[in-house]
Structures are given as structure tokens and as C-alpha cells.
Image (cartoon, rainbow, N blue to C red; front, side, top):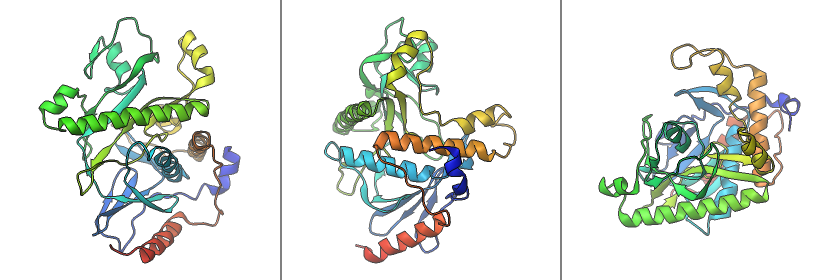
Length: 329
């Protein structure tokens, strides 16, 4: 899908989802959440795109892509690990079990890659060879495949904090998880990643790394939460060009969703200066990339809605119908 196809839909953004009548509203960077008295949580994924500790813009259909991509993967992996999903009343909405989120974020990596301060490539380039309880040999190259996928856990940063690297020993010594919880989480994460890599390979993609969040339900059972294998939580590369580009020392070909981020960085210091208004063509190009990612990952065609549809009105209407049919239990 190209930007010309998307131009008539540029106004169809879900920038916020504040709905009167729903209890316990919590607004995150991307999602608006509501907690129902019976233990259900309504998660509405908006089209907000966040970077530099602030919302930069609203990308048409981004929230729908993330919700429906996660739905595809939840359904593909339910045999491996229970998840929080109860219903999908709207393309942007999932109703899930309210969980106590575990304080460890589980990142599984199959390659020496990444750009953040906690990524293995960043730390490897800084000279570290012992990371996350794993030993890395000298002489590895950027984006090189690891012998086996590894888990690189971090603290789960709440309220805008920053993730910190962890090892299994630290997780257990600090009492962040019990030994049994860590075993269940580790086994589930590696199984989920293996399934993700296998399905991605069928689509001509490499799932290079991803992050998982787990929580416990009212019975203490460990449950997969948040989202899974979406373009925002995972790094995907195109398999066909990987070997050639790796051989030349070039970065792998990927879903480049950073049009907005790169446009901003080229024009200001986003942490210290006001951010200019982001042009419509940059917004639409980013929307096209998200839609392309959805179609390749899931194998399904993304169907554009009627241009007259107002996303927030649709969400409200669909949630009202769901709640009427499924009152507090």
C-alpha cells in the first residue's frame, strides 16, 4: 500500500481514547487503559507514536496494526503460553485479564544487534564480553547470528523510568522472581521466540529479537501480557538480503519505521528544543510501513475503512455493544 492510497484517510487517526463512563482511566504513551470492577482491563491502542519521552504524532492505523498483529501472534502461540486476551471488541481494542505485571522484562535475542544502551551490540562495541550472564567471544561482527537465542532480561521500568540490565543470579538474589517463576518465564520466552522465528521465516523474515512482558493472574498463574511480536516490540529483517548485506558490513534490510524519529533528529535536539510540526508526507510514509509490516507478518490484507468513519466514534460504539452483551461478571 502506498501513500497515495492512504492520503484520503490521513484524517482517520485515533490520537486519544478518553471515554466517559469507563472507570479507572490510565493514559500511557500509546494506550488508554480502563479497569473494570470484575478484573477485566480494556486496552485501547491509539495511533500515537512516542519517542524522546514524548508523543510526536499520530500515525493513521498504527494502533490497529499493532492490535491486529499482536492478535495474530497470540492466536499462533496460545498452545505455548496462556495470554491475557479475553475479547477483541474493536480493531484497536483488546479486553484482557488484569494482571500483576512481573518486574522483569524479558528480551530474547538471536543476533548481536541493537542501538539502545541495553542492547548487546552497544555494550559489545564498548568492550564488554560478559553481559546478562552470557559470555561473548571476541571478533563478533554487528548483526551476526548468535549460536543460540539468549535471554537478556532487564528491570521493568514503570512510570517513565529506565530499564536496567539483569542476570539470572541478580533476579533471584533480589527476589524479583522466584526460581520457579524464572524457570516458567524463561521456558515460555524461548518457546515463543522459536515459534516466532519459524513463522517469520515462512514469510521471508528474520525475527532478530523481541521483548515479552509477563504477569500473574488472580490465581498466581504466569500469563503473557501486553503485545507480542509486533513491529514496535520486535526487530524484523528481510531474510533474502541478510547474507549479502552482512557480508558487506551493511545494516540488514528492515521495516524502517523511524521516518518520524529521523526527521525530528535532523531538525532539532528533541530532548532540549521544541519539535517542529511533522509533515503529512512523513506521517503517511510511516503509516504505509506499518501496514506493509502487518500484511507481510500476518499474510492478511489490510482493508482500509470507509473514509467517513470516525475512529473514536467507532471505538465507543463497539465498546458499548461489548459491555452491554458482557456486563460485570
